[in-house]
Length: 160
Ligand code: FES
Image (cartoon, rainbow, N blue to C red; front, side, top):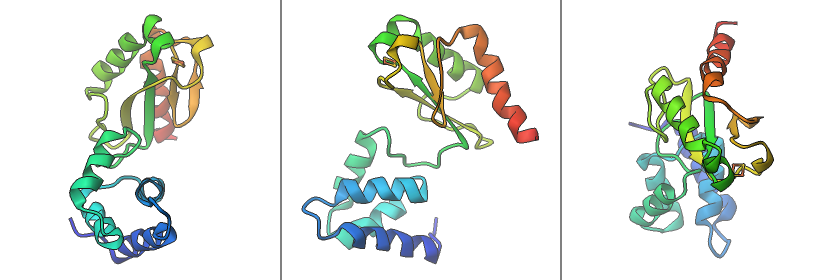
């Protein structure tokens, strides 16, 4: 894949922003993830050249932290909490149900680009476990029977 010139310029500009920091890599990767949406190999190569850091080191960081992504995210990112409080209230079953209905594994995106599914650590909503969030909106005490409705809500949005 060849990157468009504007994308290359944007990534170089982000690298420039932080290149005098003592450890610029995390700062650069966070901004690239936010502004470009994901960090594929082509983007890692530019960052590597700009910051003089081997691509293998960058790849290691991108794949270690789940908030960095190598592939584009879907329009709706479904984060299912599987932190301790949610886990004991059935968070894993909630994640499995989304996985089954969307036919993707955690970390994957549906072919139509609509949904990305992620398992998350505690999202700070333990009192209303099991909790999920979709593009930042939190859903409390999610029951397996609610899940088809929740997915449909977002499919319907696309039809509006
Ligand atoms: S463990 Fe799920 S919100 Fe805290």
